[in-house]
Length: 360
Ligand code: NAD
Ligand code: MG
Image 1 (cartoon, protein in one colour):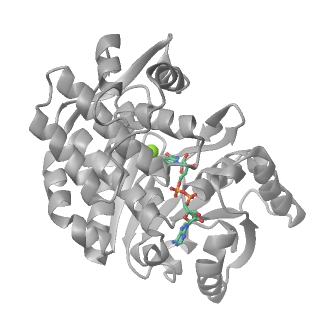
Image 2 (spheres, rainbow, N blue to C red):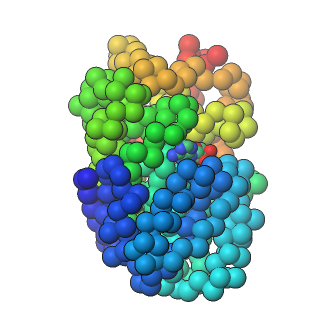
């Protein structure tokens, strides 16, 4: 097991990465203020991992209240959040009861937001069970639910006490979800570390075969990069925005097709390719570098042709993003592979990008 520390101005917490961690209650118990937790999970993950987690915690003398929610982004809502509060209140959970998020990003985001609100804030621990959640959503303290008018629009910055990323849990992850997680991992290479990009190119077959050492290295490196960025800019006033590489284009794909048609990671993958293409048109990347981005996405099993939404609709959808400031869309673009910057894109280049061979 490896442990990273995320150090922030007023808190710090460990990110544990390894195998067979679900039974390691010693990673959880030191953070508890009372021997009692509520485990927030969904029906899919509960069937796989709730019993072993609950069993090992109970063996360690910790009583567990499981709260099993329906599965899916559609349930990342105020109503579901209330179901968490209902369960906590009816079981008289206190301010010192810790919430444990056992699931992917949907469960992690909702549990974190519930923890931020319940009795004005209770501690919570992240046990991410998807690759995407292990490398992205469980780290950094962004929590949220969706509103009918926009994704992740209601939320809080609220940091967990610890993150426990167990590679063994990825064995059961559907193939498409694995690839979606790989997109966010590729993102770290593209935005800040060309050497890591090279490592990913070499090791993509092992990652797709779920080789545990390869996965652990990729998760550790990604978490380290995210932790470094969040440590410098917790509330996204500056460089944290670089983590949105591919996300402005990706968000338009997700929203334009209806959320859930493409997975978030798939949309981000195609979005990164569009960001690379826009960067080429600005003269920052050459064709070979764009081809390299396309190739690694394909290696990861990700789509590389974005849907034809129509230029006007694309631009409109991108305007509905949280990254809009004063009506102008800011993009994360690539000065080179491994060096992202935030920039505005001239309208003509944006249009040419949306008319490129990467859009159907
Ligand atoms: P998800 O939570 O919906 O999980 C994907 C699917 O995999 C679900 O059906 C889930 O039940 C299933 N699953 C989870 N773990 C499994 C396992 N080990 N084996 C088998 N099936 C498993 O999706 P996600 O991709 O993990 O997360 C997406 C969410 O994360 C979005 O809501 C997004 O907004 C959010 N997000 C948040 C941040 C952040 O910084 N807070 C960052 C990125 C994404
Ligand atoms: Mg993302």
